[in-house]
Length: 149
Image (cartoon, rainbow, N blue to C red; front, side, top):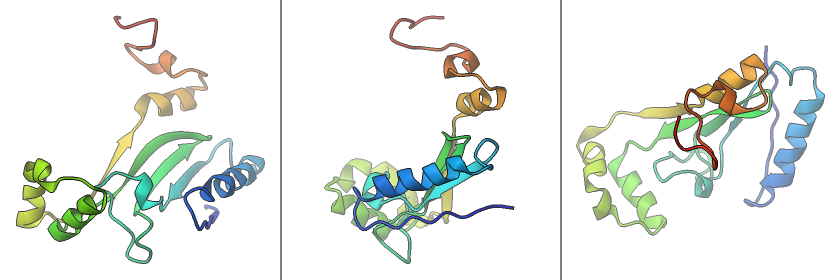
């Protein structure tokens, strides 16, 4: 069973109060302490150049963050696989596509639809074990005072 919370915003700045209000309502619910919460359809301008835009609304991406007990543990989404679409997005962001020639070869010659994600394993472990600092779940933690094991 899952609950859906919807946020609509008209500008990149309007999402901040709306997002905060939605998270506050989730925090008040009984599901928060045990729930995984997906935050989806981020603004295109806030995501990497390879994130695929939504077909329904080109200002949003087919991307997500997964929160566990309020902590982001995963980020990911669908990636652009069409050569022309990728070039168009790079140009719209002021990027020089020639610099990415080797990256674009797969797009040019037939890249299948695909996605990707990054899992914060140490963050997830921290939340599962109830630790208050990610350094307790990292084999060789680094910070401003420690660069070597």
